[in-house]
Length: 570
Image (cartoon, rainbow, N blue to C red):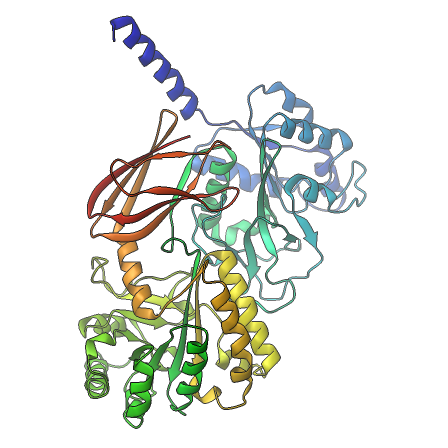
């Protein structure tokens, strides 16, 4: 290559780099019609604009506030934000449609365009037309103050599945939508799923006619309850609307999109566990039986029967909690349960999981579990804010391959139903079915906990379970139903991989660093446009698999320990 050619190549690359680094302009629509409507009804338009201004300031974004008549003055595609623009004139609607036709992206919040230019009610049609989201007339429950994002969607790349994002209560209702592209839902702290409309989306996305669209069904005045999380949600949404290439480490091994642990607290009425095990086996499923060892010692034949097909783990020595007990007392109890278990199964080290009775434990419990050779803790719903496994926070600096893995209970259990007087077949079937739908939609982790004393012959749980297990088996392609030890092994592998991305000419450079070999890792790729991406494998076994209309998976069947580099071309 001669000197002139090199100069031309360098110049071309510089032009590309400038274009790639240039952000799409951010435009906040300022609507005089909406301002007049708020003022005429005792409201303040500034209350929905000021959270955006504060967000832009925190992120050092240069955003413009423009009226609809000014939008056409921008010649390059931009990201248009409609901040709870409740009332829109025909001219404003036409200007928004024109920008979409010109390839702009749009983000709308709350009741966009539900009133006309005179402030009269016009319905939710503009939301449906613009965002592909049909608002449903569902009143939020008194405790539904949390936004629960779905994992690995185009607009939730910076937040994790099921993370509890607290929304401040406001007079303005949360809007739920029916959509094919949901990105979050609303719920209470327990993520209850069976109330009417609980699984309807509270956020949505779409891409049609060359325009990307995102919708958030809550007003800006609710953001202050969890501002840092809201910022991450907004950043991820704007990343996608700006057509940035995005990459997320998948939560689960390919081809799975969600995971489920089915477990039984095996305690009083210990022998009922065999009835449940037989149902699992009928559908080709494995469960985990957390056993009170003093009870297990009374039924050695039952333990042997369970261990032949399922995972045996610990539910302590006796059915008393561990929280606030002295460390020496907790340690003595753990050693006692391990000793009892060693007399019941041929290889006691195979029992690597623990579930505290009554979900009563503390940081001391988790530190001592690891010290006594246990590998996972099936923990309480408050163990994590998201609906994913994680490494215990009880000890700092422990590498993933040695850390205790925490598996939080993310579903209601039979005891929740019993306490509310709903332990009946219909209620149990509803709870099981809607919880499964939620875990699949959110691409998260489900933990179903049952108790032996509730699983009696002819009881509501025994009657409800076959239909549920049949659904679990039917979803094998998407849903990974695994025992605690298998999930623990996977999560340690996943956490041993770090990923960094760098945009480069026409593509994305991906640098992976694995502390150990990892199998079936998937990297979720969101390309900047409609063109089919191409991956340069650099001698690895990496391949591309299309997941849906928006997402691809870079699948690594065998990722070696050490550094690996991949390049994706768009």
